[in-house]
Length: 171
Length: 162
Image (cartoon, rainbow over all chains, first blue to last red; front, side, top):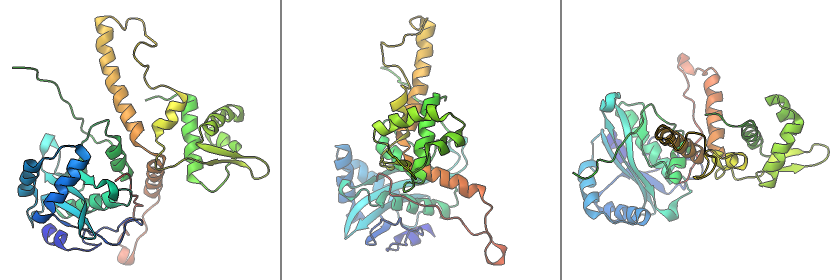
């Protein structure tokens, strides 16, 4: 079961081989309530906005142990949170067969370039695979070159779907 | 998406050199492989060398080798050395561009340019090498393990930017 496996700590808890440059001390596991302040701090450091209320809501929805469809994983290095990834399996949205969506991934700036993001993506991909899906998808701003390059480096390519939007204007 | 001949040649060359980073690859080898004149290729390589992407070694066994950072150099970095994907505002106005129809068409073309730029800017030389590796693995028939079961191929992973 996805939840039970992701609760195991240790380098192999995600069922994926870590990249060669990943320190052996990094473990991927399911998020715990006590991790939340560090997750909020990483997000605030990267985006410049602290969103405590939002993260509490995300934790309530995705931090549930044993829930194969929803994943909120953290990378822990020496007792502190080095990064996190969140996603879920979505069924038949936009006519797409069930697939895994990654909608948040980040690594503490001082912990980057060590394969933490790759480990997190591998872990959530493994969890999605165990949940029965074979495609992982994400969406991000075109000018977010850093994260775009990261996903590209992990083998992701443009998908079959195109995001479209328009300004609704005032009422 | 159509890139100019020199740009494509530059990308081919950079990728060929990056595939064999420790070897000095002769320009003639690239010219033969991609069916271009050595003279034409020399101009492209000279531009790449000026930008520090490749370096040349003279003499016997000489040639070119990759001198950039494969994990930082993007396709866009190489493309920009040879062409502009889109003309900056106020430059290269096409006839009819200021008409209502021309302006509407420009909006669509600008969207395509933005997507192309985002794609080229997010793909590094290292990512391209992995794409090549995957294509080659996919082209090779999968070996079978004990009991005739297929052996899963293991993809090389990289830290990327995170």
